[in-house]
Image (cartoon, rainbow, N blue to C red; front, side, top):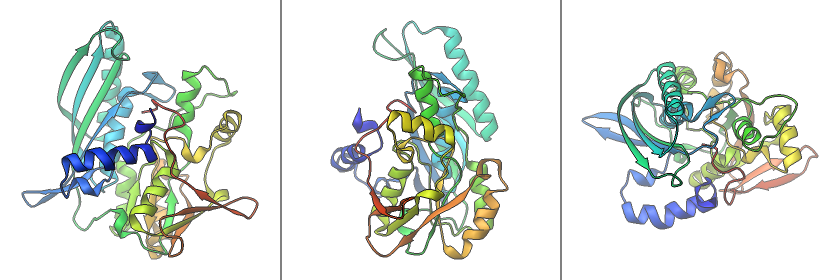
Length: 329
């Protein structure tokens, strides 16, 4: 299970098996989506599979995730999603109203994100060989002229911005899966981020990199960017927006909110001269109202993420080995 968690084991699987097997310059980008040129047009292309349990949870469902997850992967390349494909893998015995509920949620999410589900496929596996419904989506979108988002563009002095509260989705899934009560219902932050990214790019196309911190959470996203860009990252723990409900739940269960998955947040690395304007623009958008600066990139300790603690000390933020909470997307 750890190999699917978005941490060090996932990276090992990709680097040691998939990259050598498939090769190619495009795959070597290893971004949330691939940036490709076709007929003189720059496209973003991405695929994702969703195996979340339970299928319906506070704030969303596997149908919402299947749309928003792929739309967000495209948005991290600066692209506005245009078309999605959809593959349903159904377990024998799953009730038709369940399938209909997932499909309805997926259609509503697609309309809200301004994307069309243009093609699809359905397979059924024997009872006991699935978990009700699995979904794969792939998507394509146009990358605007002048936009080039990749970790290699990150340089010392960049400002690190997170768009809002972290850890919400993972804790929402865990609470319903395990039947836990925290005194208040925690809803997933599942949302399509294309509109927020457009708002940011309207300020300047010169953003350096965007990531949606899903599996492995904020910590994994920061560690990956530090490694690829060969820069150090310094974050301020006190600046990281963790809502009290998430902080309390994580404290009870021994989890670190920085490693808990999100499905409606992004982290941006922005040149310092544009940071204030980008932050102000993000706060005008509903999905960026809680945006805040959490740190910066530095020339020292390249490839390493360091957190300044509340007590004035420092700690190294490592790439997680596997996943604290499996099956959250």
